[in-house]
Image (cartoon, rainbow, N blue to C red; front, side, top):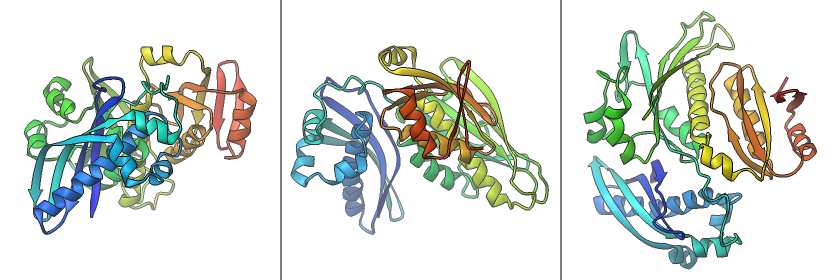
Length: 352
């Protein structure tokens, strides 16, 4: 049994060679067997990450059609950076070298993809649960860890990174300093995971039996300093149990982290000059509604990029880059029961 904890992409060594790091896990009674499984998984996962970076449509299905010999042609080598063994579990950080030329040829991609340089930037995400006045981070009883790991990876598609929580991580941050730590103190850890910024989400759930919202304090750490933002997530019903409130908070945090990873730089905006640009506002009641609308927008065949730099409750504003005309995009959104209301400032999208 193997699964991926976190992965990140480094800058290509040259035009066709890419180095991709994957922190994976192999589970077996035999250490050697677990390590072998982790390495094999790393190779396939690294290939998937490169396909995503090159904007390969339906990457999972496309790669599933490749033969072992074709995969072998693309992967030029790997290096095990480090491993750690705990009981039957082996953690392996693997650096995989991939040549994209055969990948482009086999998947029918052009030799030079103008959009290949547009990639998500890694966001290192940490979930902190306030148990009274005591913050929980690496502790096993932190209820945010597992659902954040699962949903963050799914929604972020590899760009939202959950740290492993190994001894090196614990030397940098724990419950004593998680509420006050600065970017410079985490810089080495951030670089180790290949991220660009840190999102620390501090959650205090509303009391069961009340309509009190869960409070999420976002500490965004970058080389420019710390930015504080706050989300409140109201329960749909006062009878919602703490588990339900936690799941709602996890979804909100994962969506914010995905937005941050998807936001683009000035240079990347310039590279999108040929695309149609539309200011958009997402209007929603729950973060799940917001996520559904985002998925619908990203499913449009001509989708290029969503730039969503701000975080607000029930209203998110940004810019949508796409190919094709507005009429086709509106017809696409209509299939997902999304209302499009044109305004002087662009489009307002909602489900109601």
